[in-house]
Image (cartoon, rainbow over all chains, first blue to last red):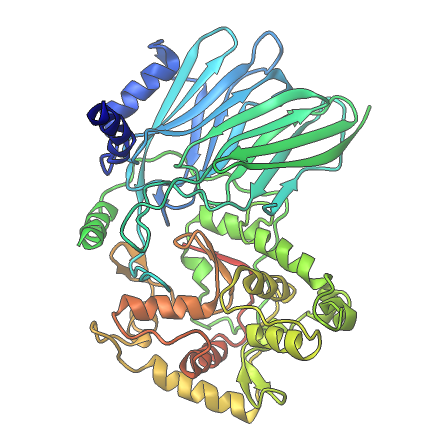
Length: 147
Length: 107
Length: 275
C-alpha cells in the first residue's frame, strides 16, 4: 500500500520532468486534438509577426481571419500553436458575433527560432490554418542571478 | 490588485467596431524557468481572460505559459447600445481581477 | 554551458535567411513622435530605438502597447498619494507633474546641495521622500521607485537630454568617461570597445547599440520588466565577467553622469522599450 502511494505521489514529479522543448510532432498532435482531426483549409487567415525578432520574451503577433462576423457566419475560435517551446499551446481564443472583427493581437514567448501555426474555426464547423517560420535572436550579455 | 490598463474609446456610434487593448501586470511565471537554487520556479500564470458587454460574452482567452509577462490582449467589439464592459482575469494561486468600463453608444 | 550553446546556436540561426510572414501593421492609435532633439544634421549619434525592429519600436511608440505604462500608472498613483509623517504627496509641493516635472529627468544626474554630492533622479526622489514627506525611502530598483522614475521621466519625453553644467557634475562625468574607456572583467572589455567602436555590428546575433542612456527606465524585453540605467550597467559588467558594484555606487553615478553628457541634446524617450 505504501509503495503504491509513493508511486502515485511521484507521478506529478515525473510530469514536471518535461523535455526542454516540444517537437513538431507534439505540435501536430496538439492541433489534431484541438480540431478533432478535422481538415484544415489554408486560406482566409493571416499571421502578422516580425521576420526577425529582437527578443523571444515578448513577440508581438496579430491573427486575422476573414469573416463577416454575423450571427449566421462568424469565427468561433482562434488558437496559436508552436513547435519548439516546452509546451505546444500558446493561447486559445473563443469569439462571438459580438466581436465584430475576427482579429486578435497579443505578445508571446518564443524559446527559439521555430514554426508557429494559427488555427481558426468558423460557425459552420470548418477549420483554417496558417503557418509561419520566425527567427528569434537572444540577448548577448546575460544577467547573473541576484542582480 | 495588479495594475491593469484598458484602452478603448469612451463612445462610439451603433454598429461601429471598436478596438480594445487590455494590459495587466503579471509575471506569467512559466514553471520552466530555473530559480536561483537551480530548481524550476513554480508556474504562476493568468489562465483565463474574458470580456462581457451588456451581459453577453464577447471574447474569452485561455492563456498558456507561452504568453508574455504582463499579458497584452487586443481585440474588437461591435458597439450596439450604451452599456458596461466587464473584463476579468483569473489565474494560478487564486489570482482574480475584474475591471469595468462604460461605453456610450450613439445612434 | 547551456547558455553558451544557445548563444552559438542563435548566432548561427541569425545568419540564416528569414522566411517569416509580413511586417507588423503601422499607424497605432495613440502614437507620439520620437521627438525633436537638438542634434546637428551630421551628428552620428543614434538612440537604441533606431536599432530595434519596427515591432519593438511600435511597442515603445504606442502608449496603449508599451508595457512600461503599467509602471507609469503606478507612479501616477503614487504622485498624488499622501504618505509619510508629513501626510503630504509629491503633488502637495509640485502640483501637476505634467507641468512641474517637464525637463526635470533630462537634467539628472546633478549636484545636490542637500546631499552634498552628485545624485541621480531616483536618489532625488528618495531625498524628497525623506526630507519633505518624512516618509521611508524606496529600495533601489524596487517596483515603486522604478514606477516613480518612469512617471517623472515620462514628463520629459521628447525633451532634449540636458546634463547639468555644474562643476561637480562635470567632474563626475569626467570620472565616468575614464570608467567608460577602461577595460574590465575576465573578458577584459571596456564599454567603449563595444558601444563606441563596434556599434551597429552584432554580438552573438544581437545588434550592439551606441549605448545612449536616453530612454531610462526601460521595459527591457529580456528582463520582462522595467529596470534602471544602473541595472543595465550592472548587467553589462556581469556580461564581461567583472565585479558588479552595488546600486548607488559612486562608479555607477559617475557613469550615469558621463552617459548623460554623451547623449546631450538627444531626445528623451522614457519610458523606453528595449530588446
